[in-house]
Image (cartoon, rainbow, N blue to C red):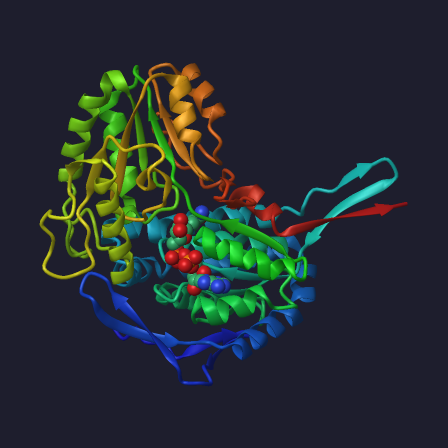
Amino acid sequence: MDLARTDFYLDGRWVAAPTGQTLPVHNPATEQVVATVPAGTATDVDRAVAAARAAFPGWAATAPADRAAHLDRLHTALTARADTIARTVATELGTPLKVATRVQAGLPLTVLRGYVDLAARPPAEETIGHSLVVREPIGVVGAITPWNYPLHQVVAKLAPALAAGCTVVLKPSELTPLVAYLLFDAVHSAGLPPGVVNLVTGTGGVVGEAIAAHPDVDMVSFTGSTAVGRRISHLAADRVARVALELGGKSANVILDDADLATAVKVGVGNAFLNSGQTCTAWTRMLVHRSRYDEALTLAAQAAQGYRLGDPFDPATRLGPLVSAAQRQRVRDHIDKGLADGGRLIAGGPDAPLPGRGWFVAPTVIADVDPDSALAQEEVFGPVLAVLAVDDDDHAVAVANNSRYGLAGAVWSGDDERALRVARRMRTGAVDINGAPFNPLAPFGGYKQSGLGRELGSHGLDEFLQTKAIQR
Ligand code: NAD
C-alpha cells in the first residue's frame, strides 16, 4: 500500500503542503522508510488556527444533539477503517497486529462511542443564590500527541473537545503520523463542518512549539514526556492559556503476601510489556512482599521467556520492536545502568537473542533494584520490569510513593478491604485492584509530575469547558 501523504487537513479540505519538505516514517520491524509526510511550519499552524478560530462560534452554538450526530457519523466512518488502522499502527509503530486490532484500533472506537453519548447531554447548569452558573466551551484547542497509542491519544482529546463545542488543531507525533491521516479521512467522509478539526504534521520543535505558543490557541492539550510538558506549560503561561498534560509514569504493582501470586505476576508482567513497554501507565516496578519474593521472581522469569519477539504481522508474535533506533538505545542504556547499579538479571538483558533486524529489545526482568536507583525512578519506555522486595504494607506504600511520578498502579491481595486501604494511600491517578480491567469512562491522569487534568469520560469533557456565573 502507498502510505505517503503530501497534504494537511485545513478548513474542511485536504490542502497540499506548500514547502515540499517531508519527514520519513519508518517501519521499526524492518528499519525501512515506509512513507513520508509533510514537515509543517509555523505558517501552516497559523492557517490551521485561523480555520479553527473561524469555525468556533458556529460549532459552539451547535445543539448538543447535532454535535453528537456528527460524532456518531465519525464513529461509523472510523469503524469502517478499523482494519486499516490496526495494520497502519502495526506498520508505523510495530505493535503486534492482534494487540493493534484490540487496543490501537478498538480502544479509540470505544472512547469515541462514549463521547457520542456524552455530547448529546448539554453541560449541567446550576443555580447558586441569585447566580446561574453555566459552562461553555473554552475555544480553540491545540492537541499535541505522542507515538505509543497514536490514535487513542488523539481521540482522547479530539472527541471530548468536539463534544464540549471546541474546535481543534492536531499535531500527531512525527514518528507515527499515518494513522492520524486515516482519522482525518474519516472526519472528511463524516462531513464535519469546515475548520472544526484541522491537521498539521511536523516536528515538535517547529509545529508543536508554534501551536503551544500561538496567541489564538485557548488551550493546549498535550500527551508526551514530562520534559516537553514542562516546555509547553512555559509557552502557554505567557498568555495564561489552559494546559492539560498527560505525561510519564513509573507505576508500582504492589503484590501483598496474601495475593494470588501466579495471577498477579503473570498479569503484572503482561502489563509491563504491553506495546513493548511503551505505555505510560505500565506497571514497571513490581513490589513483592519479601515472603513471596523468590517465588515471584521465578514466575516473572517464566512469564518473560514466554514473550516471542518478531514480525508484528506474524500471529505468533507477542512483542514487537521499539518505535525507533533512538528509543532502543535509551532502553539499552537503562538496562546497562540498572545492572551496573546492582540489579540482578532474571530474564532477557543485553545478550539475549533478537531477530536479525528491527529495533528490538528482549523482554527483561531485573531483580533487587534499589528503590532510589535510576531504574526504579526513571521511565524506561521499553520491555523492562524492575522487581523490588518490600517488608509490609507500610513499606510497600512508601516505596510505591517514592517517585516523582504518579500515573497508575496496582494492588493484589486476597483481602479486598486491605487492597483498598493500600490503594487509597497510593499517590497516583489510578489503581487497579486484583487485575480489575481498564475503564474507558473513568477519569485518567496523573498526580505529581505525571500531569495536570484528566482525560476520558465526563471528567475528560469537563477539561474543555469553562465556567460563567450570571447574576440576576
Ligand atoms: P515527546 O514528549 O517527545 O513528544 C510528544 C509530542 O510532543 C510529539 O508530537 C512531539 O513532536 C511533540 N513535541 C516535542 N517537542 C516539543 C516542543 N518543544 N513543543 C511542542 N511539542 C513538542 O514524547 P514521545 O517520545 O512522543 O512519547 C513518549 C513519552 O510520552 C513518554 O515519556 C510517555 O510516558 C509519555 N506518554 C504519556 C502518556 C499519558 O497519557 N500520560 C501517554 C503516552 C505517552
